[in-house]
Length: 222
Image (cartoon, rainbow, N blue to C red; front, side):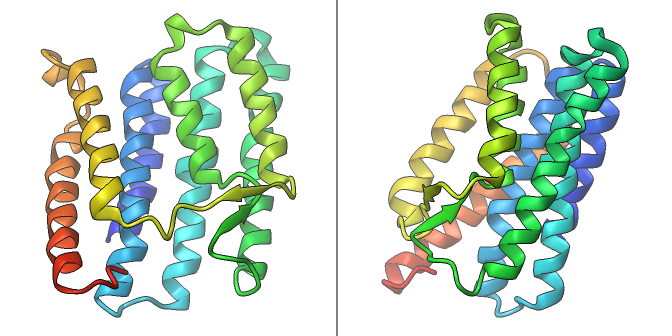
């Protein structure tokens, strides 16, 4: 359900971007990141992880963190280059799909301490955040970051993984900070924000609370 929720957020993000609601589209990608960070851990806690879930997760990721961010960047900036801009925006999901496929066939050999190349989840999230603050960031900076992320995803650079960082100690602090930031950004604009944000946030807080209690009762919180 969480993985499919991630996928649905990606679909909704494309729709919001097409209707010119770019901030809402970016927030939906961030909600997708939230759900993506939860599904694997919940599956392991409930002992419900499977090969089907892993494949479904990759399919959801290519939509939410590949296709949706590329459309978002196209509608906010690359549209002015017409067909060439559309073609350039389309490179992002292509590189992301290659990165996911490479990860899927090598995940058994890779270390839990690092990723090979930037994960598509992080790359898509960065583009979403850039769009949220698009009026304060020059377009040339967005273009450079967009291009750099495309190549970093398929590169063989080792990116440190935070999988071994205890979530109750660090993740809760980061999540609380991001939650406060989103609240400040959308204070007084309830009707303009996607309602999913107000559903996903309590669920994520409940999940973190459960993780915190479980971590107290069991040192091995994963």
